[in-house]
Image (tube, rainbow, N blue to C red; front, side):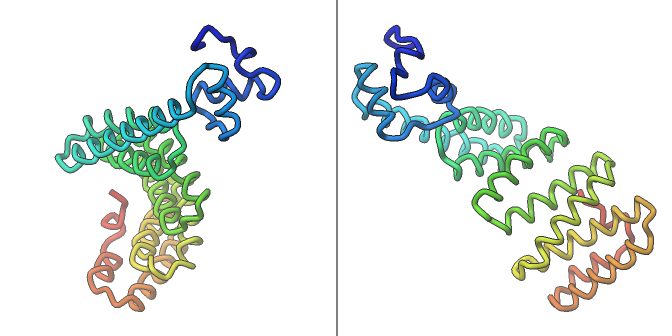
Length: 233
């Protein structure tokens, strides 16, 4: 402990020792009044902690920018390395936009590298973030991507469940019609793999009907292709 203080001494009567422990591990951000107490006991000005927090934000954004540039160069290993470093920074600060961007870059690198189990863990975190802020468009995309991950693992039962969840959400989001058609074809491919041929046919027909409504000739051609052509990549 800095300045030779134990957790109990730093906590005093006003703060619990467990809360001090959470702050030290980057799992909690102290309220202003708590920060003032901690600063006073450590003999530091409050600005000392605020400046340190600003520095961590800058480091996190710099790292994720580097990861993004590496992705653009198709240097997936470097992108993943920098994203993982940025994620460690995220655990010590409260910055959901930074964390979302870090996880998005990390997911892209993991998925393209074929690290599907790791990608599923990253998607779990993204789904939690999107649910927290009620970002339904991105939540739909994350659920559909989760279906793709399980499809690639040939866990078709779980892929089916995630595609169904995504479609149930996406059917209420008019701006996502094109993506909804694509996800429907993935659902139909999954049903086909599971031997649910009548369900697959019905899903294909629904996708075709939606495609006609969106007037997207390219998408219509995609839906009309053979079942294996509709498998998620």
